[in-house]
Length: 203
Image (cartoon, rainbow, N blue to C red):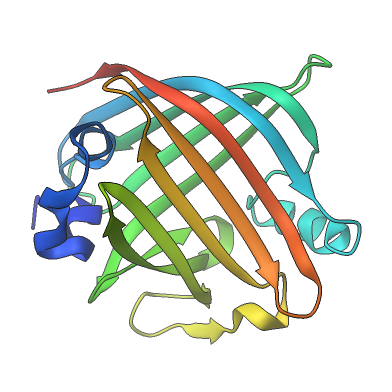
């Protein structure tokens, strides 16, 4: 098994251009028992009225966050497991009204500069990876149903539109994440942004 971190496999030589804090976030070697724990706050989770029906359907698959709010405390745990090639995510959103939502997924290398982030029932989003000024950029390449090299592609534009994610260090201890999904006809459909710090990491 290749123990190179999933994101490093997709980035190749560009991995070394990432800010050290971002590398630490994604530097979990597959096939080992490792983890990174982060705490932070989402300044906003947003989706449009037009997108609302699709957002709630996505929750059936364990995807996206189907509740608008601001100033949401969030804990994120990234981990790897013995004999498993994926990087696993566990996100917990604690809303101001006292409710709690979780969002789980796993990222696998899909060849070239691409990864697929899977949720339930074999549904995933394929994303191309790149680095700009030390920040990590994700750009969606459509949804994907099934195994990485033998699944069914679903174009972005049939649903919410193309997603862009950027993760950048804003200090040696904090990083921010911005997620934005826009459709060329309908504009912004979904997005969130927040700031986090790593509070624990297995070395």
